Figure 1 (tube, rainbow, N blue to C red):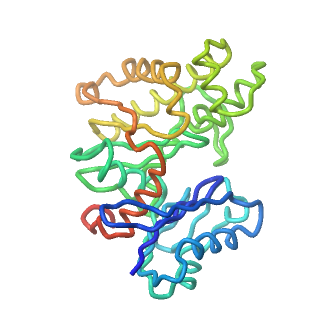
Figure 2 (figure 1 turned 180 degrees about the vertical axis):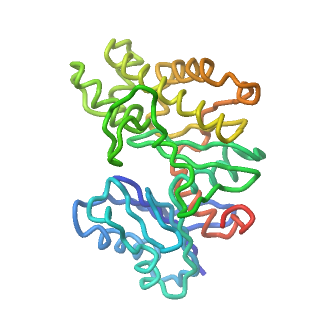
Length: 301
């Protein structure tokens, strides 16, 4: 019997085999192509599965998703943006498998709750800050799911005063201000000559003034969003991961300063914000937890 985990990201797919102890191994990845997207995903799954009999698959997907209908509509995959019946297609590929779908942020929360910074925490927030911004919520020891499965979409909390256009169609979302991609775009508008969030973080650590300003802007927006989430949800810990979150002090210092400024209620002052200890593949790890049945109906349903 073989259990698989699948991560549907904005730019890459990843899949692997779930082993005992919630570890996902034999991981393969592929870029998301501009067209024939399902064919690329199907090929990846077949390569990972080989000749094994697949009995369960956990899927963490960029959102929005509809876990009741089994469909996904990732904002950054144009071919699927109108809605793609992913569960039905995967079921056709592996007819004997039990398939469980969650938005990527819910898988992130599952991973942090089982093997990361939210272990033992009953009320917490898990966030990823990378090319986009996602998140998941642990409330009273279980993942918040919501009506369609999209609870925890913290990337679309609105930043005060921002009119930056977002890929969702709105304006002022924290993803449009503080993601690596958005921060690099803003910096280029100010005269910076780099391309990526990773380059921007490197230049900020080296003291480049525009890069420093971009990360201060991003960190402040993140701190505002986290403070809003803390007041709404009454959480006591937020765990932040993702490539852009590894930018270090130029991002984290303004983020923590904004939290100090805005999280002033008695119950929010104890909020701890810490970096994730899961250094790679948190969504895939959470999909593995989902697939292997470690996430019971009491924790995710």
